[in-house]
Image (tube, rainbow, N blue to C red):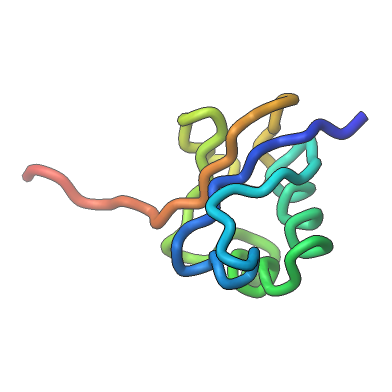
Length: 92
């Protein structure tokens, strides 16, 4: 059974959702969430995926935990999914 999740949409992608900050979609993995985003809000696949992986410079957090597995990461029922710019750097 697929689970409903809340996706927090980055400001640059909000035109795809008619300006909505969050949307509800279904999926048990990040990949399934992206498929449902594309089905309901065309343009997400192109914005998020390149060569069958997350675009360089993007990361996904599920329930506030960054997911190193990317599209393969599990998404539990009623989760919050955040699409974020990848962070790098820090102190030397």
